[in-house]
Amino acid sequence: MIRENGLNEIDQYAMQAIRCRVRTLIGRYGIVPDDREDLIQQLFLEYLERAGGFDPERGRYKTFVNCVVRNQVVSLVRARKRQLREATLCALPTPVEDSDEEASGRSTEISEDTYRMSVGLASRPAADLLDLRIDVDRACGALPPDLREIGRRVVEEGVKDVSRALGRSPTRIYQLLWKMRPMFREFGLAPAAGGVQ
Image (cartoon, rainbow, N blue to C red; front, side, top):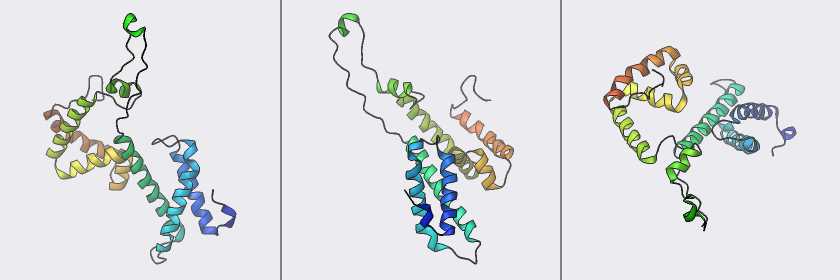
């Protein structure tokens, strides 16, 4: 744990900014309260590595600190999202032999797909998800480059962050996403019944 009373004023400011950012991450992206101190220490060490890059001609030090902390948190969130997306298939526990199993007709074996869907790691069987991924990649490949980039960024960052970054309203981002729908329909990727139209 980092002792704040031994830090200079600006490092204390950085620590306060880091604590505020970490507080907003708890409960999101697989980050739990037990990760709090580790994240604070990790972000503070990364801040210290970059602190020497401050250029007073480009702005105030507090602005520099806030930008460094924000960028580190964005990198951390992207890495966590990537880990969650690329969750590897875990081996299922070996079923315990039950002598009464055959007599009763019960089976303790479940498929990996069933297991992953039951614990919320997948919404569909792996073969269906692979087919869907292939179709989505083909549809994205057929989009104009600007729409493809906006679609990619919306998936990674969300509509609100993309609209802020591009200086456009969320409504305009949704309009651009709407333009993509015909291409996805062409590849058989219509929304599920009862989904958002």
